[in-house]
Image (cartoon, rainbow, N blue to C red; front, top):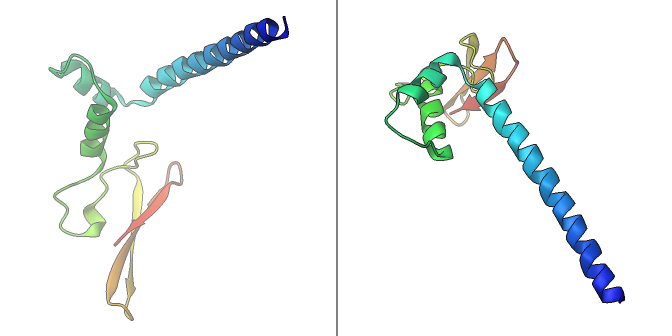
Length: 117
């Protein structure tokens, strides 16, 4: 009798956990589309791809944010990857001891920052 109650109770708990997970997952999916810029939404709608994978969306975002033809690190980012703002402050620092140059990126809108070599 105790085994049957344990199995039943365990099944109910696992269903509640699964239901909560899927509900949270759906909410985060809706939040993702609200964060896309209008330009990216248009690109997605005009695309030939019927269903976008995460890989496809990442490629689109990368094309929008990162300049792959950058000649130096100061031209790497086109816009902020966090908020999409083009208001980036780019600083260049030189490490003379190791003969290396670093670019420091800061978004003036959301205060995101990153660096590259």
